[in-house]
Length: 284
Image (cartoon, rainbow, N blue to C red; front, side):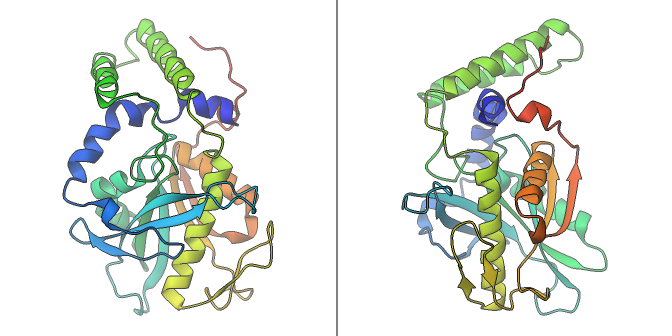
């Protein structure tokens, strides 16, 4: 899975997204939030709520105590949570791989909330996947901001790829070069499966915060039960999810790993899972 991920992930974000994030996030200091294993929200960005969630760095090794921090941004529902029409939380992933969920929320959060609202009103939540944007530690492939900016300027001259086959070849070569650059940093713990486990932790922490429930962790590899956390008979909170582009790969991965933890899932612009598992076809 990591082969395709390493070659194509984060390159759009790394080349162009960092500057946009710095502009939109200039009025909030993420480091002012102390990371926590619980979801502890702070007011941010004029009507949003932000948190920094501690999760295990290596989900496969419970003896490894190292952690990573996931940046979370939520837009509260248009109605109070105790209102009969409140429908819970919808988690969004904008794609990428490596797209910033916090940036997506600031840019499109209200539009997305209007999109999903109907008979029910929903809280909208997104996050920066591990290594991305405000999640720490960063998975930064560039040695300096100047190097990142230089690539961004190069990209500006090659935006329209459908009018010249040479531009498509340039993009493919550039993505491969960026992936080769990223192999110099440690991305062992940045797989799609790891992010899916992070999402499950977010689902559980949202339920815990909303219902004042207590988590019981019966053991590694077993379902995490939350007593009375959701209106399901088994007490397990379930994800409501909207994923775009690569977010459809993430959603499918989550549903495959945790099929009993899905309430509703919408996948828009479904990406080819074959191309996201390292079995890269010849191109260009």
